[in-house]
Image (tube, rainbow, N blue to C red; front, side, top):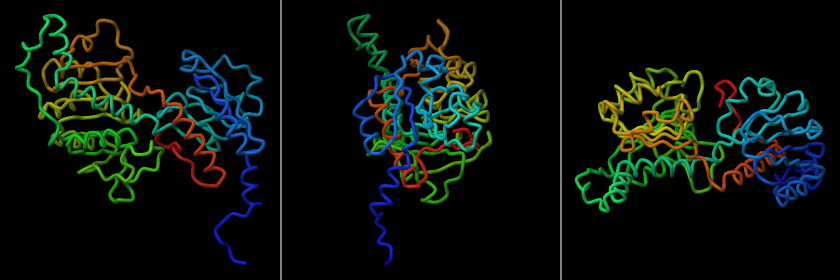
Length: 372
């Protein structure tokens, strides 16, 4: 009898049994979601979820508080920071709860090519895109200046001379067109902006421009159809060519690697000075040379900057970037925050378990060559 393409009950049952010897350890700064745990354990017979609730303070650093006995039999881990490799000899999959995985890059588990690493890429775009556009509009429309004038003088009419340029016809360059960049593009294009996209690898065909990472339904640019023009390359010259495209706004969304550290420095601000480009950085502080940024703002080479990340982070009290309210807006690495964040992480865990069961490629698998 020929195959119908439908799994037989025995095959389906066998697939569901494939996790019967697996234990997934969840490290999150939230109390256990018992309903979610029950759903997974009911779906996959024998599968166990071991949820370890950590405080926000403990969550953000190398774990040294979980008892060694908690790691017994663990084959899968969902966590932000690394754990001692010797406690996880059976681990075969690590689901990182962040989009970047810098703390893991030299970890023995990461260096073991038999351990699959996946990121939480796609959990951040909606809220970070709102931060990008919100801060840009706040500064370009002088909301802070009007608020301060009203608070201090009881009226803001004294600032009616300030000029605001609206969005249609503006050109936004997105340096790093991943999940975050794609949602930024979606929102900016709705305001009438033209989008230029930059990626490390060339994207010459419609198929190559598609994004197979996790994304919140109804968001982003999964088919890669929004950019009016695409740029690519791994050299500084390639990036400089992208920056020279008369960009009104530059949004930095790159992963941090050795090759992208201080990718925006004095030379790049000189290029951006032609259009007095507005800079928005939601990636990592080390992408931008801080001293060069201060100079560029003071000398009027760029119109302004919005920074959710800085170098150093946090900035020391009284730093010059904190004393430029009309030109520079700084937040303490909070653009990723949303009450829905860890719901999205759990959705990725569910998706990846199901893909493993079906023998399919998992979502958000890390590119070990490039470290993201």
